[in-house]
Amino acid sequence: MKRLRGALCAAVLVILAISLPASAAAATAPIKLGFVYIMSGPFATYGQFAKQGAEMAIDEINREGGILGRQLEARFEDSTGKPDVGIRVFRKLVFQEAVDCLIGLDSSGVANAVVPALLQMKTPLIITHAATPDVTGSLCNRYAFRISLNLDQNVKAAALIAAETKADTWTTIGPDYAFGHQSWEYFQKYLKQIKPAVRFLPEAQTAFPPAKTTDFSAYITKLMQAKPQGVLISLWGGNLIDFVRQADQMGFFSGDFEVLMTLGGAVEVLDALRDKMPKGIWVGTRYWFLANDTDRNQRFRNDYYNRYGQYPSYNAHGAYGAVYSYKAAVEKAATVDKEAVITALEGLSLELPVGLITIRAEDHQALTDACWGKTSADPAYPIPILKPLRVFPGAEITPPVTETGCQMTP
Image (cartoon, rainbow, N blue to C red; front, side):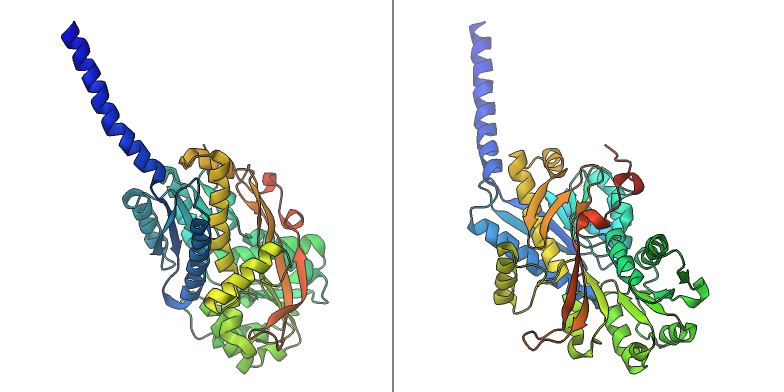
């Protein structure tokens, strides 16, 4: 019996000798964050801004001691804007790189493919750009969160502005995938509710060019020949930049109709176009660096400009805000355990440069403000600014959970 007891004690000591150092190492090991954005092609500028925002947040947090005493490390991957590539790099980050949290996503098409796959990856994803309402609606699940404005919220703001104009007949041009078609669908829904007499031109007089389009002249001609009183433009990134340059040359912006660009207020677009962006056009954005003068926003805007020589875009703000959202959740949970962090993210409120956001527990969509403004020149800035500026409170443009289609899966 004495020999048996001795052997058991020795075994316990060996186990402790092995496990204690491992636990201690895990408690001090860096926390890994995996970022996926479009880093190549005509939308690469968006990925670059996001990377800059993420790196600035990580550097700030690491200088202050990290999260729970642990430093942050980043892994960046390029989704290329393709769903199959997006799923592959997300799986790589989870199963090979063992990241603690996923952040990213520019494309709604990629988001709709990736979110269902999170049920196998069992890792929280904080979406900062992709705007399809599906990922916090019909496709919602425990692992998907979004801190940025979604398409539903942004288009509701667009409809409120459209209703104030004299335009009664509208058409659209948008990318030929979920984002473009859903932007038009939700715009019609909301504007019809506000202004029942409004008319929308038939499908044959709308335009949905493929994302690879570089020559928009045929689509511009089609819109002008339709003679609308208002045009909703949901093109973004390189597509929007090409469209604006070509439309300006063809006299599109001299037409007698209203123009609303849902993402024309992106710094990436304004910086690329500069004085080529027509003045007096209503444009929307998910974050505008001059929208508020809080200490939080001023510090972010100034630090970003001093570091990169550019004003922060909404994609830079999104990645920056996601890192701080994760930090707040981990500190609330007092652990990096993924399931505990998910629980902490549900209902989380925190102050970001854009203002106070609250992540709804029921569908994981953040209540956050939408910014719209008219393009204007100001000698104090190298890019067009938004003046006048309209800020739509998140609570007023976000549909109730019962209307989102979200049935949260465990």
